Length: 115
Image (tube, rainbow, N blue to C red; front, side, top):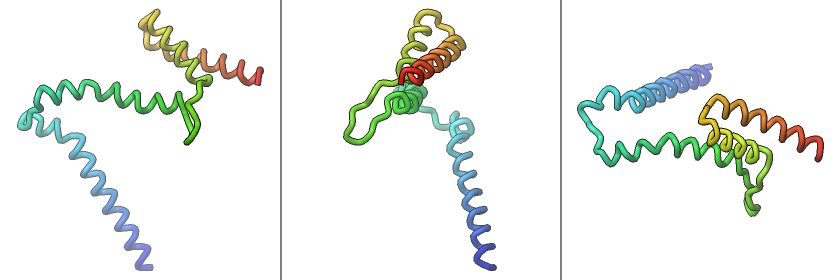
């Protein structure tokens, strides 16, 4: 019975330490930012972080590949291209989301009916 309680306290302590580290790393710049200013080169580089993160999430989802096989284009890629074309035409983010999803549903239904 003692080992069950020991593992409970271990998990609780590990969770608490992870919480502390997460709060310090995420809030550290807000708390200590005035005392530790970032160089201009770092500030310029950080402007590209959101686009890089979005690219790192979206591209593998749109172009999945397996080891030894080339990437293939499917319904998600065509729907994403439709959404990009819609954005270039309208510059409306909500319309891009709605139009991209509608294009995905239509293309997915057509692929299901044909295949």
